Image 1 (spheres, rainbow, N blue to C red):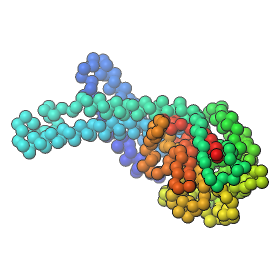
Image 2: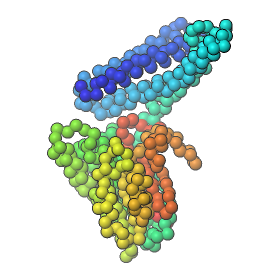
Image 3: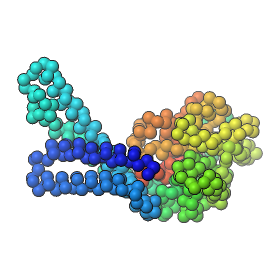
Image 4: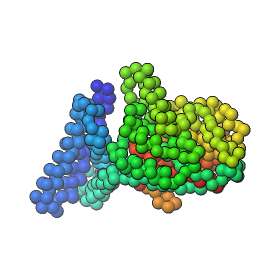
Length: 415
């Protein structure tokens, strides 16, 4: 089967992690009663065996036919257990390195108090590091479980942006930006409707959607077209495509079927009343003054994501307008092409990263593992007179939750 070799490597790693973590459990259990020790050990090995067996047999089951909610949560729990144990193993490895170092020093300096074996009684596994590792792994897993409840907890982020060259008629214009809806991941239509109502409650003059309407297939929008069709604004609703919209992550029966899926998705944008910009621009007019809105297909500086965007085509004719807004799904486009080649673009709006749906945000500080991959990953960035705003995503994919990085409705006011 495809990727079966990789799967069995992961299964093997999970088994080794289970055995390794068990050594720490044995260290912290001696003070417990025999009944408590037995109960904890049984529970640990029951769930460990269940997760390993689940991962091992999934390729041989008709997994894709299972209910979406079951698939999503099962995958998230198994993966969450894997990374939680991996984190715990890091702390245990630090302790083992300490013990090995003590043994080596004892050998080098002929310390008689140190046994010939690095795992001897003279150097027992540290109870502190064992507890620390188990607490870190358990904390991560608990946090991921908690995050399940945040996936529809929509948060409004407001930002005021000042531009010297913005025509007077557009000062005070309110833009609502949405990104990364990923309708194929939704399981609660009423919760999604509340998110759309929250966006409309901001009373935007203009609504801009910066890509990834679906996970893979246009049919994922069937149950949600009526919801997102409610998005209306006086100056219109405009959209562009993200990397997931092209269906590149599905094995299609033919290239023709894949293309038909993309054409279907394009029609959906129009049927909802959204103007999809495909490497093109359009004029926005107010009180006789004009600015230009540019929409480009997905363009990424990273090799594992596609470059369908054609900036030369999208920008053609935009030169004459005093103020330019660009919708481009992937924020890596900003440093790679927009800033060096198109310095006249005033504001770029992007999404794509989701803030990895995991991180920490407090006033004056934000962190997520995704920042080690993307320089611009959430919020506002400025270089000279150019600005970039990266939306944290309306939906979710893979992990059905949010930890620290909440789903976002961005309200941008031009002042």
